[in-house]
Amino acid sequence: MSISIVPQLVKKDLLLWRKMILIFGLANLIAIGILAMLYGRVPSWVFSNLGFSLLIIPGAACGMALLMQTNVFEKVKSTQPFIMSLPVTVKEFTLAKLLVNIPVFTAFWLVMISASFYFCFGLGLFPMGALPFMVMVFLGIFVAYTLILSVSILFQSLGITVIAIMFFEMGTPAYLWTVVYLNPISDYIYGSEAVWNSTALTIVTIQVLVVIFTVSATYFIQSRKRDFI
Amino acid sequence: MNIPMAVECQGISKIYPHFQLQNVDLSFEQGTVMGLVGPNGAGKSTILRLVMGLLGPDSGSIKVLGNSMPANQVSAKRNIGFISDDMRLYESETIAFHMDFIKSIFNSWDDEYATTLLQRFNLTKQQKVKGLSHGQRVKTTLLLALARRPNLLVFDEPTTGLDPVVRKEVLNEMMSSLEDETRSILFSSHNTLDIEQISDYITFIYGGRIIESRNKEDFLDSWRRLRLINSNSCQLPNLPNIRSIQKSGQLCAVTVTNYEDTTPEKFTNAGFTVDTVERLTLEEIFLSSVHYAERTAKKETIS
Image: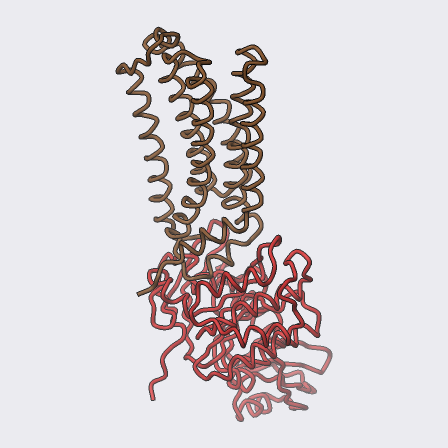
């Protein structure tokens, strides 16, 4: 029986891009440090806007750069024939790409959420009523990421992936503005308690399902590909 | 004794919008070398990619070292070393990084042989790929393919763009890898000299079709150019094995395939004087075959 080489492929990508991941990780820590220094010294609206940008940029940039390097440039730079000449199927190759990209982005995403929740709710920047909306915001980022990742794996095209990044990056704020104007969300956003009504739960559930469906569909579609290079 | 087959392709077709690989049969035994010759766009790379399981055929069957492709490609690729002209390594990394990566995948990796190849190719493990010349890059990919000790080597245009010195080194290493009698090579090239040098079998491919495939000795033995003198303005006999005719005054050069000892007699009987009978180089045979295939294809299109 042949042993899968997925672990070796994952390790290879992590080794290849370790410096880039570490640099973005360091940037993330610096961002948190800057926010800790600024807390209480600038108006709260300045802090929340600046904080949101500082926390998102390193993670989002690392996620995008990693998916570009591991999926798109693997094809553009013709390293894919080298990998595909090894004992690996398209299905395993796809699994390896998912197992490199998703955990790295998830790590940044969890740091992003932890820091945001600490500043927003731990230090009382936002009322607890904003919690469901904040969860939707961060899940929205994850949904956009998985959709872009899926496009990059399925098409391996620089142009299409860049268009997907632009589309989903512009689409995410539009989605958030739509959500925040829904009465069952906006009515409780300034409340002192988090209200998980059916609208909030439905949105969150749909977001989680979209993530699961996108990843599964990507794996399934790739598994059925007969031609790989 | 029944020698197991290295590659068995039967009736394989692959259809693209602007190119069709049609009904390709290609087989050779383990321990032999098959050379694929064809012009650009003939379908050589498509065949090799089908053999590697990187493409799925639209019809037909492919078996490599007894494994059906692409279904059992993982098992087959454990025993195949593949080099392709368009294959690149990771530029930011060293040769050592690539060696460690391949070693982590193949239990058959031979450290001693890898070190020997590094020395023979004048490569340094710590060299980064982005600093390598084209020749050094080809030698590195060859090292990575050979040191895993595969049973089958599949090379797509391995010598393209190499200077004569490096080309010789690469070919020598390919040939010395055949010291293991069970190892087979399938390789493509436009360079007929390379093919002639190391192949046991030769296949000509043109326009997605195999136009000729046989043992190298048979190939070279079966083609001749007859230089004829036509002093009596006679008509050339209508022989099915004539592939090209060049006339200049009374002189006439006729290229034939399936040459037999009786072939000159057929021209003598038709009133010609046979001046000389020459053997052809593989390049000349290839060019004649391609021109004949082109003419036949045009005739088929018109009719």
